[in-house]
Image 1 (cartoon, rainbow, N blue to C red):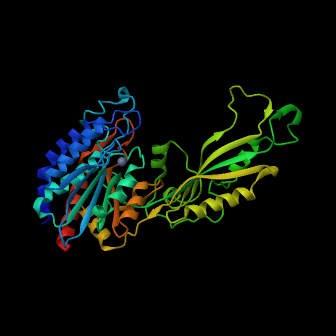
Image 2: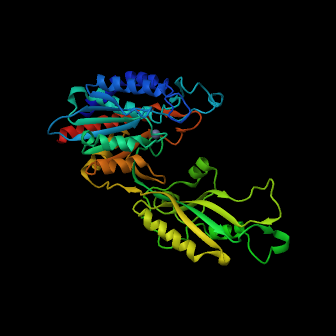
Image 3: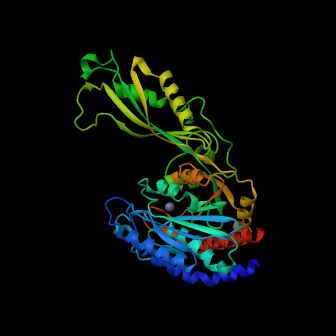
Length: 440
Ligand SMILES: [Zn+2]
């Protein structure tokens, strides 16, 4: 049975590849300031691809960045929601690309082009599975292809709520992230949350001469720096008391991989994967202090910093914010007056990967990757869509996977898709949907 569906998938792959290239040729950039008419064209193409699979299809939302909804339900059978997005990041300077970002080109087994991986390949994974299964699709499907993932206007959360009754599903497959390495599949089962806060430190009622008063009263930049330095201990671990940490992930993020991806030297203690996925992190996103150019001999009365606190997947963001406030209150330097204002917050997500759906996903990935077990990974960043989905379809098992590999450079220059991994991702989804239908 498996061999039959593998053969059927391989038979549809040339057409899948051709349609992926058609999608990549449409510069459906959703960032502000771009012409949005290509997004209309990519939505229309996605709609026709889904219609051709026998789905009742319509373009939804009129934010200027439309989404596409396609439905084919099977009464009495489980329903699977399949998600991807058809908008892309801007290409940046086309001269920096080895080939035209909107003219797909194959080199060394990879397909280059903006959106080739993120996330037009995600769309085509779903289409490939639907084509390979054809009338043997034993489950209902709802396909939702978003048009503003790369630049959220708030229209998608509203849309998901409007479409709530049509989106109900037992399983939701969100195909928009990556695998662990070429040859090693992954499912992402945890995401950190975050809190962003503006911290303002005032030490003086007004600027005064640094020669006359320096040494007697502090300037706000020094006081703010001292406060910021209290957020970490000497090793580089977060020193805000009471924040949650989760158990360490099973996989380790190798130091050379971290170096290759960031150019940075690790800090803090313990596993890098744990520090990125299951523990809190503090960063300073911006500061307001006098710039060097034009600086005068003045003690600065007030300075501000935008503090980003990433929190463990199951941490409550409001609790984390009050722990941050408590920390600041206990570390106010030299009688300064300090205020902390919340600027944004979102919870993380911890997916229960223990049930039968995840067991079937693991088997399908292992079969598609020639016996290689998928690793469970986390993500240090949040994905707002998943929180909205979890609210709109609370009973669904959410599966977060994708086609990218560490060399895909999503959002970057020379974005590319590994074509062998793409085929495996298409095969895994075909096998998973087939078995889910058979099991029902
Ligand atoms: Zn994406």
